[in-house]
Image (cartoon, rainbow, N blue to C red; front, top):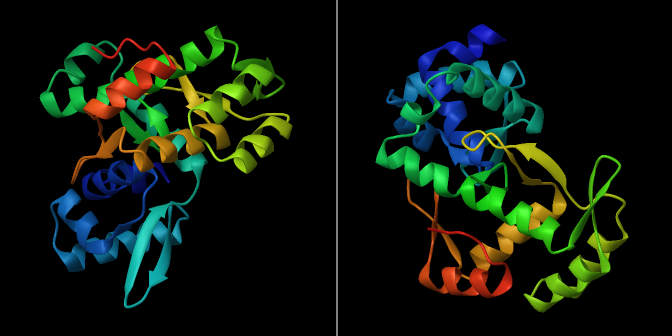
Length: 222
């Protein structure tokens, strides 16, 4: 399994899929810098070993990481690889964008994700629970106030755990994962507060997003 991940082209494909979104074989070939036929061979190996899964959509197939266990392995390897050279590893402009805000298997990660979790806890919207965090009455009112669907907020409020801590690859502190985190990222994207950068895993904070998030939670976004 380690050898499958270590092959350079496959490693680049897996890294591209860490955002949690599905990608076509063509996208993954470009990300890995290999031909379409070579990409297909690599994807077949990754699929047979249970690292990625494929979904047919019309005439095309789209690939994603098999589950969050695979993501955790990839991020753990990255954390070990960057020991002693963390600041240098994140010094390029592309990596700085990734460090600011990115999608991590469907939830918000990077500096913005870490700050958001800290503020949600500080404001009492989340409280520690067995296995993660529970949504408090204050959090239920707050989420409704920023526009999350009432039925979704009710479901999150009834759940014993609405979110879980996830060690952030770049910040080495926890950001929020789980159903609440997924709902928050979808909401931020739908409202235009965050937008995806083409060909990147990083997320851009838009001017309306900067204003909206500053009203909602006083994040340090500079």
